[in-house]
Length: 131
Image (cartoon, rainbow, N blue to C red; front, side):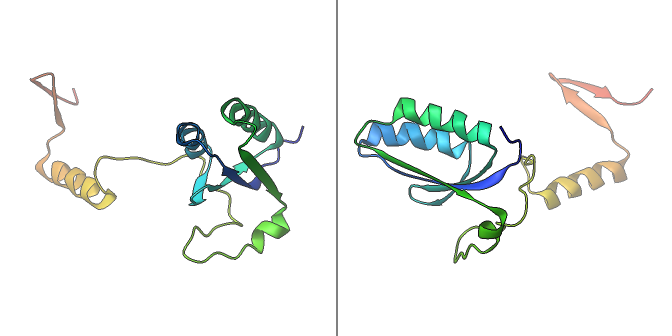
């Protein structure tokens, strides 16, 4: 099997709302939603087979699943309006999640540095960093 990741369009039509919710939960962990039942994912052959196996356990014979493998040339010619761009770039390997927007986090770090305070409150006790 190839370890080369390619863009895949994963489309489904699920008739039962309970199965739809289960399938949606799997898909949102694998790709980015483009339309109601259409996701785009960057997966290699092994990952797509694992995904198809997971989805097969959820889907009923009346449901439909379509997986479209896009070659790099086809992915670069994808036309998108009001949707996610970036079909030619590889997605980031990780996403940084913070509780504050970046500019607020930087401002609070700068304020701490100006005050010379590098103390932390841990479990009600105030502990000071350094020696």
